[in-house]
Picture (cartoon, one colour):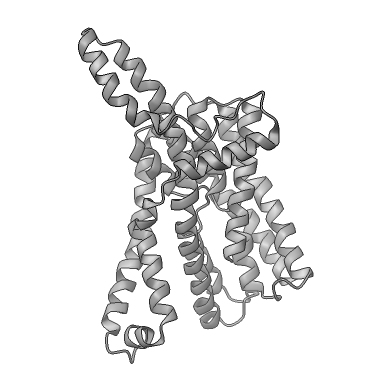
Length: 329
């Protein structure tokens, strides 16, 4: 599953980059487009969809209790891996693009100041801060050979990458969960009805059960800006919808079926379904949070989230039906 999550993000990034080139998107939107194409909602939706499918009679996943136990384990692992990838990889893509936008906007606003002395003082203060962001994900010279541009991109991306966001609450919870799960003494102390501190596990379950609908409501509130509209091109929005709901799921079918065919993974209908579902989900909700953190392209992000999530019931229903047929055949 970690490999599959990484592949979904890399393929999404590649398709997002192609979309940027085809649509000739503005520079300040490139990070948002690539981030929305790469990072999917690998947590909330699988945790909602998989238990619902397990409870259906005559499903391809066997006994409902066994299906629910394994399905929640797969969905939880998907959420954990998605959080780590999103806040380490997708975050830095959005961050670099946002810094480039700020770099262009702040000096322009300073030159419009009426007081020349104050303007020059502000520029001298801001310039060192912006100097660190002078190179961005898209600063790839048009006249430089492809191999040199790729090397330049990798070097500058590693120089400007920020890893402190890995200490976000979601990723800290993932790390803590892995520690508890891998150490038998801690696992026996906290997990199970016979555990001494099982009340902690019960409390976490209560919080977790309430967190999913709460986060869904928060997502709905963040879509208000999308209803008002923005200056984002319609072909960009349609392109992201095509990436997330057409190209990625199709590629996912070939990858997962190929992995089973070549013996990389064993035939397991439930596990295969989870892997396939990771290719068909809408963009991660955290992408909208990231744009709010930087205060850039918020309305554009709301429009993308509005249309991708508005179409997700139709797209997920169709793809889940096909995935169920594939894993049960």
